[in-house]
Length: 336
Image (cartoon, rainbow, N blue to C red):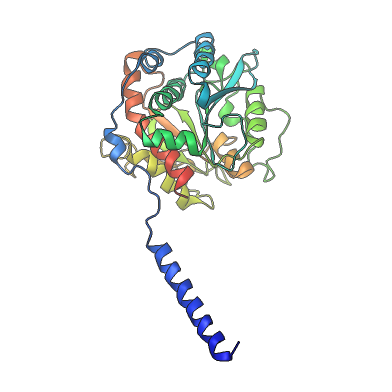
């Protein structure tokens, strides 16, 4: 082969690379639901209406979950991840068209009822499961979530606290102060004093790689992101290394909510999101441990200003938060 022919081929190869690069960067990045989810219409069937009528007690909750995996068995599996102090089962409901199988797809988790007297997360997770089952065939986003990721729903991390209608577990320990904390020990080594509910979550989270997560709480209307603590226990903005990413994914949630990111939410005028340490320092939180230990981008969503709102409000709360949940799941699983 002559030197001239080789030179021409090299030039053509470079032109091809440049062209392909320009095409790649001109393609639109996958985008989450933008603000269209604020007006997302929720069609209610009997099963969805049932879980939005009232807070199911622990026995009814377990019965409903088992009924769900029987009705929606092609896209779900129920996994016991541990027991509470009083021996109640802590369940994780897996939603996927390949539930129970290992795939090269993102894992996302939603955890409710970390504090026993904050039970709206129980309702949101059950409602989401019913919405996905009912809309899997006809809704493109529902189908994408079920087909292209593994979504894990833990409605009740603290079933004993729920039964007693108190924040803490049976041993009077706040589970969101019970995780190994990197400000106290940079290695986040378990102390051995963690509660059974905390241990169950730590072992389960360690068994798979979650890319993102929400922990549902109540008492405000805001998305809270790391860090939760500071080096000297003072209150100030303390961003983690992925601060910009956390602000972005928090805004995915808040901006899809009808009120959270609007002027009506006067307590949090910065788009309905807050750095945890700037709000108030917390140590031993689940979201900081998730980030340090497993690289999971977990945020804490405060879903309502009042704790344990009246059951008459549950249907509206689900409607308000469904679009935000879908926007967060889609944006963190697919748009990264």
